[in-house]
Figure 1: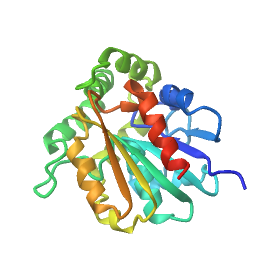
Figure 2 (figure 1 turned 60 degrees about the horizontal axis):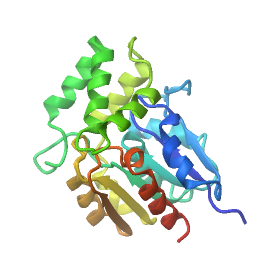
Figure 3 (figure 1 turned 180 degrees about the vertical axis):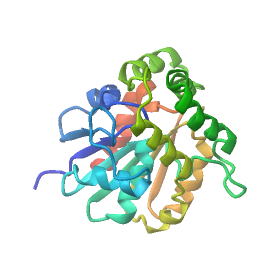
Figure 4 (figure 1 turned 135 degrees about the vertical axis):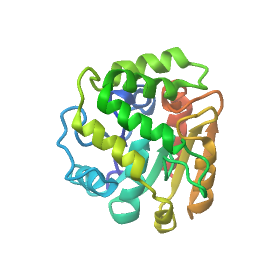
Length: 245
C-alpha cells in the first residue's frame, strides 16, 4: 500500500508555485500534490464565499486520503476539511495558521477588525496596492525578508485588476471562525509558526495547540508568516516527521 500523498494548500492571492522551496526540500519519497485554491491560478471558483464552499471545492480535487499541508488561508481550509471529512484527511500540517483571522473580545491574537475591513474595502478600490501591503505583512519579522518577498512576488496572483475570487477569499478570511471545530479534529496535527508572524500571531497557534487533542507546535525563530520560504529545510523535516510517524 502506497503512503498517503501530501496535498499542499497555499494562501490567499498566491499560486501553487509558492511551495517550490519546500517541495525541493521534501524530495521525491512521497507523492506531492499542490492544489490551487478556488479561483486562483485558473482553478474553478467555489459556489459561495464561505469556508465550507471553498473546502468542498478543494475536496473534489483531492485524492481519497491525504496528509494535508495548509498555509494561512490554506491552513484554515485544511482545518475545515479535517473536521468535516476525517476519512479523507490522515493528518495535518498547519503553517502560519489560525482558526479566526479577526480579533474579538475572546480572541485577541488576531488582526483588529478595522484592519481586516480596510483590506476588504481596499482590495475593492485599489487591488494592486492592497495586495502588495498584504504580501509585505507576510515578510515582517523574518530575517530573510527580501528573499521571502521575492518568492511571494513571483508566486502571487495578478493585482492589476480586481479579481472576484480574491475578493471572495478576503470575505472567507474576514468571516471564518473555526474555534468550535477544533475539538472534532482527532488526527495528528503538526503546527509550524514563525515567531515574528504579525499576520497570524504565534499566540493563535499556541491556543490551537491546546484546543486540539493530538497536536504539536514548533516555532521557527526569526521567521514571519511564511517559514517554509525562509526555513524550508526545517519545515520539511517537521513535515516528514509527521508523515512518517
